[in-house]
Amino acid sequence: MAPTLQPADTSSAAAQLDALLHAAAVAPLDSTGWIRVTGSDRVRWLNGMVTNNIQTLAPGEGCYNFVLNAQGRIQGDVTAFPLEDSIFLETSRSQLPALLAHLDRFIIMDDVELADISDSRHGLLIAGPNALRTVQELGGASCSSPPPATPLSAGLNLKQTAYRGAPVDLIRAYSPLVPCFEVWADPGTIAQIGAELAAIPTAIPQALEALRILSGTPRYATDIRNTDTAHDLPQETAQTRALHFTKGCYLGQEIVERIHSRGAVHRTFHGFQLTGALPTPGTAITGESFDRPVGEFTSVAAIPLPSGPIQLALGYVRREALDRNLPLEYPGGIATPIALPYAIP
Image 1 (tube, one colour):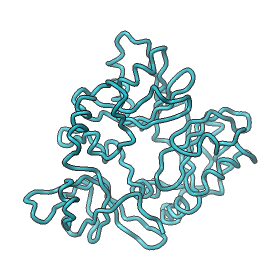
Image 2 (image 1 turned 180 degrees about the vertical axis):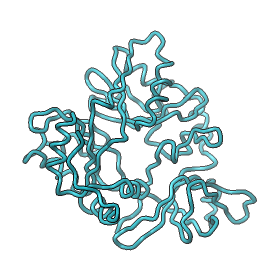
Image 3 (image 1 turned 180 degrees about the horizontal axis):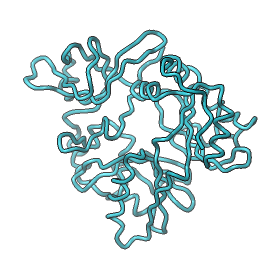
Image 4 (image 1 turned 90 degrees about the horizontal axis):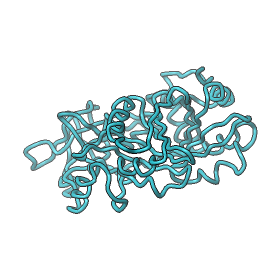
């Protein structure tokens, strides 16, 4: 049963983005997948499979991780939430088959079981400056006692609480630009929550993609690549939130530590403001005095901000070009490196 949400109007992406940036909007989380890890060895085993520190997390605390192979190539990304009796791994549904196969290969003599529980969990995103207040007022009062603001005030957190007596998981998600919450429950409960939030705009994918690019958040298989022609190393992604350098051994650690000990990578993930024709992902970036491209775009969007439209891109660029503050170009325009998240007026 799908949530009862306000019908999406594809002509109003600008209004929906405005709601995301200055009020609140909702969206179904249909493309999100979940893996449940159980067994007495789950914490030790998972800590040896991902790039962040699982062992120090209290129940409900979360952390973002890369999953690597022995060569240090990124095989996927997951957000891990240890609970009392299991660990929930949140990722995209498109990653599930490959991630499950990869992780399962390394369960040898461990008491660990993996289960795809995506079909049993329906989710709703509530995002924007008013998102926390919206969450706290669900059901006509605070969602639980103590109110969600207490455990969900900062960082990644999952709180198991209730909505009108039905169990729900409430997540404070990573979002450097505006607060974002996820509510996960059975289909009927999510439908009730959707009906209660029917007056709030529903954000279509174009508006959510604009928010992602404004936030400067890479997406696996789009901005974080693992193909025969492009594979991005963990430090190149600039996602230091996924890495822990003192936790001990894990799969692919040797490559990560080698890069860390050298102190830098030759290229890095970055944001760009574009002037000129809107390029397509994969377009090369060139720089004065370089005889070959210095980078490429991975995500590109024309973003209808209330203050006026802008063109932004995410991609990779050689650090030398950034350090030398050289003019950067692409066929049909100029790419100005900028810090993200974007400063919203």
